[in-house]
Image (tube, rainbow, N blue to C red):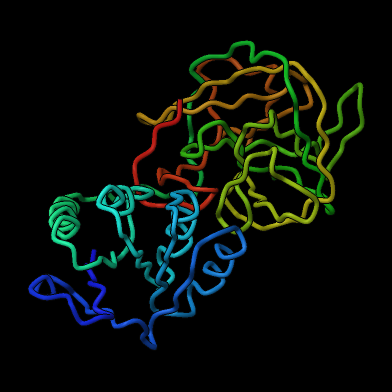
Length: 314
């Protein structure tokens, strides 16, 4: 993390010796944003990937907008520098969303610089482990099956049909999502709905076409979701309708290596998962020890964006 000093009035003094950059009020590689509301947050986000640096100033610090900017900027080529005028904000901004900002712009005040130098030194000693991301599907084993209570169930209706073997990656833990099959198979009692995935309760994650996740509660017509088959092949499709009704649930817990996950799904014969043998099985027929296909991505998430960092969901 770089430390910049506010030298607009040319009064940085000896503190300038510790600075990575003297800030004189403007520079061609820096876009300045006064982060005061949602509109200014969106303005800053629109510049990510376009300018080398975005300088964020805020009279009353709000951490959530800053976290949003950090999550959007990682890997984009745009770096975030934040103007800090209070010593108490140094630690929080430096480690916001675990990663923190790329630079702090500090006034020439010894107390703030002393704090910033100590925090920056501690930050250099923190290493993020590279998290596993698998593009292919893995086999997890069912470890328990219990009642999942009674709540709001979401069906995702697409504007196109699914093929046998296709479905969506859904679950309660973003690290290990389960392949839930589309309603392409007719039963004795109801016709097929090949455009539909019975996705589960509103809290569950679903993998989107852009690699982010969304809660089922956030989905709306026009969103594009990832469609995956039993071979791990992926395409995308647009949502035409979201259907929410109150239904009873099952909680299916599963495990891959040391990674634990669970799928809460409607207790219905028409809800199916896919096993490693391309066998499609109803959730009401599952037993402990059965295998199911899962997608492993151990990165943390912020508003659906995948980030290197530590998270535990139980």
